[in-house]
Image 1: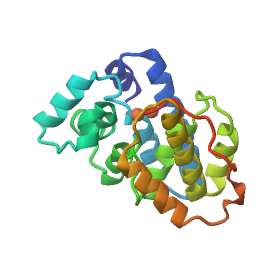
Image 2 (image 1 turned 60 degrees about the horizontal axis):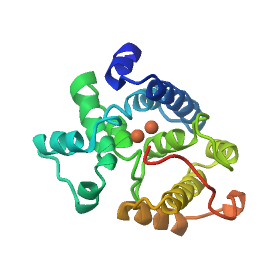
Image 3 (image 1 turned 180 degrees about the horizontal axis):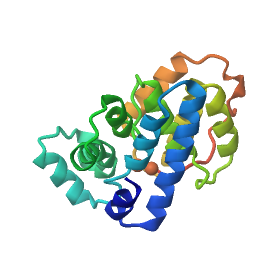
Length: 201
Ligand SMILES: [Fe+2]
Ligand SMILES: [Fe+2]
């Protein structure tokens, strides 16, 4: 799989990123009692469409009859997650709905996320190739408490997007609100949103 992913991505920098995401997802899955092989596969395949230009993302989604909402039409880059799941199915024969779901939700989180969804989202946002204040603390938190880490990383991502003037998907705000509602033991979180990751990832 590694060689095929490398060829498909066509960029060494992106390949190194997916390797780091797969490794961190594997460790988080082991810690939280999830399938480590599903976590690794989701990590390896999550960015298959990341380097597609906007016109190709829209065309490939439309060709498959995938619904494209208003935000996605205005910000096609986020479609790399949903299209990436289709490519994982078509080109790598992935049939596990939990792996495909995690790939679909790795850029725009959902209000309801499975544990594997959370693990991939966190591994993508927290892999060591990213550098921003609070990253290491959030990574450590992810090993103790997935929901608390999700809240921290979504906050961080929203703050970063807003600081750069990049529109934030309505679903991201819905996910943030959902994690805030369920917030428990938040004393471990940074007090203020941290300057964060390069998004969308
Ligand atoms: Fe991505
Ligand atoms: Fe990524």
